[in-house]
Length: 133
Image 1 (tube, rainbow, N blue to C red):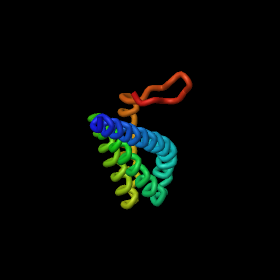
Image 2: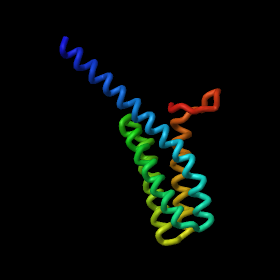
Image 3: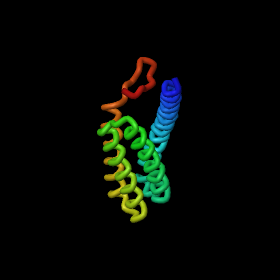
Image 4: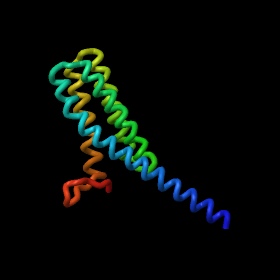
């Protein structure tokens, strides 16, 4: 009986952690949406301090994404997260070098990782919201 109780408590705890991570992931994805547009505009304007700040936000977002997909053992999601993180770091490096062309190219790489993952793992619902496949 103790084993069943311990396993039940463990399972409920794991489900709670899973739910918390899911919520963190959703918040992170909403933050990505709010960050990407202004970051792109900052790159176009040559506002490198803003580009650097946006790149840091994107690094944090991709770290949350990588954690989420790692916990699910989703190889493509993990790789897209790593690629996105590398692109965000490249955006930051380009901002430090004040190289708008490099920032723009790295931004395109980051956007491509988002698109790949959204296509594979996101489904639009009838009410206009999305769910993870």
